[in-house]
Length: 361
Image 1 (spheres, helix red, strand yellow):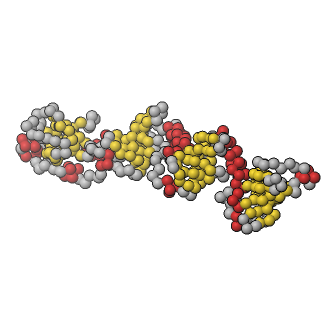
Image 2: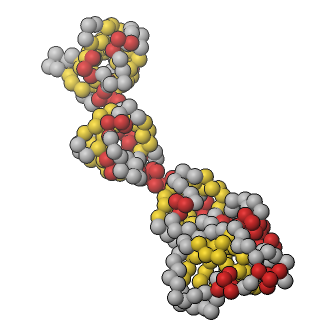
Image 3: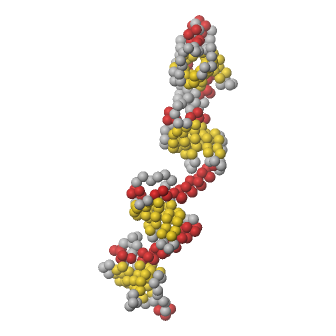
């Protein structure tokens, strides 16, 4: 008690006090050394509700003014701000994450309650632009300090930095486990004219249109849509550039394996033109299975176009090279009697006629 009585109290000191009396708009707080000071409700931080305080409670307070008569005026909010400032400095030096609640929208961003006021620019809230900042009021943010003003005790923070660091850590971890030939689950996040982008859990991979389906497609939306969960095969990846090429069709049944053995030379089918050149036509006889119609086997005076349906006679089928040649001329030129030697009738068949019920591929 004797040592307590010798304590020298001065403005700026932070002490732990005990509430000894509660009045209409202020508290009387014992801060030791037989000294008591007045704590106005205005000097309480927003986190403290005055009506919930009672005699006997302890508070950390700062002596912010001593008048000529020696009366002590205390502040809990200033003590909290000073303590918070010390924590903010430590978090900045140690590159630590701070959690804080958004309290107000201001020009250019939002204010957060750290125990003191902090500012988060709108560009530093998320990786993507934020539409309505008002929706963030009351929400918790995970932040890192990006700028400090020691003279004014001002702090600027960023949640975007935290999110980007976490994303980069995920990317590094994922790239360390990727291998060509793996089947991975992902989510379609974006469509482009040339393919679909899939989030593998930290890094996006591209499925080119040619790898989306065995069938020919014009746009990825014919096969997938944003939000679809898909199983894809890793075709190749560049760890340095963090680029991954994927295939959806390789994770699907191969239509050649499923259906090519049901095709026979001399068979007539309705096919769809997928490519037109002066020397040959490419036609799709089964979704994912193409046949080439060489020059001399189609009428060059006819204007063929992609998507057009044509009647095709299968001339040759090479299972080892997966190559099929066909003829459009023979559909008209070959008599029904000639087809009998192949063991098939002379009627033009549809896809269902050729294969029976064909499952989707």
